[in-house]
Amino acid sequence: MKKLFLIAMCLLTWTAQAGGNKHQVTVVVKNIKANTGEIRASLYVSESSFLKEGVYVSQKVTGNDELTLVFDPVEAGVYAVSIYHDENANGELDTWVFGIPAEPYGFSNDAKGSYGPPSFADAQFEVATDQNITITLH
Image (cartoon, rainbow, N blue to C red; front, side, top):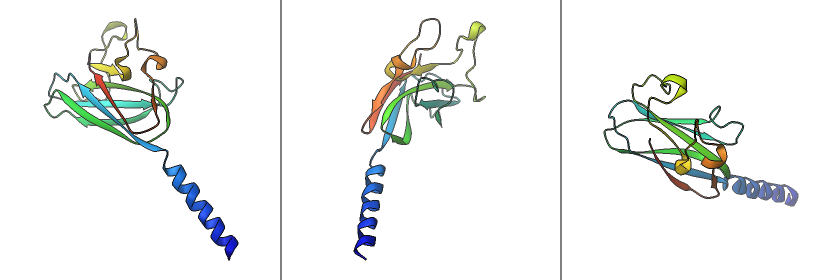
């Protein structure tokens, strides 16, 4: 009986510790100019997944020049966020010739690329506790 109790206590302790590594990433999006569509954001866990495969959230634009999105739960680690304002709500980032974005967009750290998107390294931030980041649309 003592062994069973000890095993149960170890499992409870391990579960509590594993659950303690989850955090919340709150993204404040600024400079929203159009009152239509939605803000779409993706959270990326690595350079290899950057701008390809991420955790996605979106929220309808409410008429304010600022909006808040939340990624929850997020494990401790290094991440990057990309966002864009899907003004016409067609579910994709509209582009001009040569793939230049026709809709406002932004990245964590307000990272900017030259002749393309920024690198994961420029946009990355560490999550060790709950994080609040601000991204300004360009």
